[in-house]
Image (tube, rainbow, N blue to C red):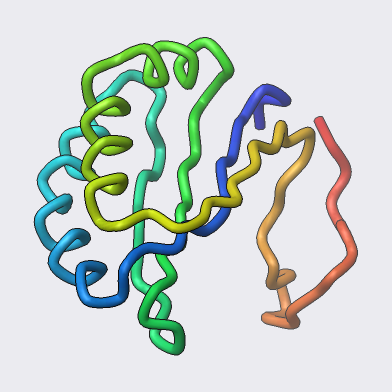
Length: 119
């Protein structure tokens, strides 16, 4: 795996009365963003226990691809779209990943430790 993989994870809070419609109307924009170079995952999803919370999850192949996204139309449109939902807070972070592996080992046992060696 590339050591330059970038994950963005976090949460935003919006007006609870606007959250579900805002996410539904952003579905095409999420799908369009996934067509961008280097976008592996891009989803904003509702928290089932907090009517104001939206979770953010994105994976990008490299920093350059993320940088292009952040300067592009899809990013600006999503930013403005979420902002129009009565944004009251945001907490998102980016992570550069140096190693990743499956949670389950070859026996089907879930493991918290990293049990394979890097290439």
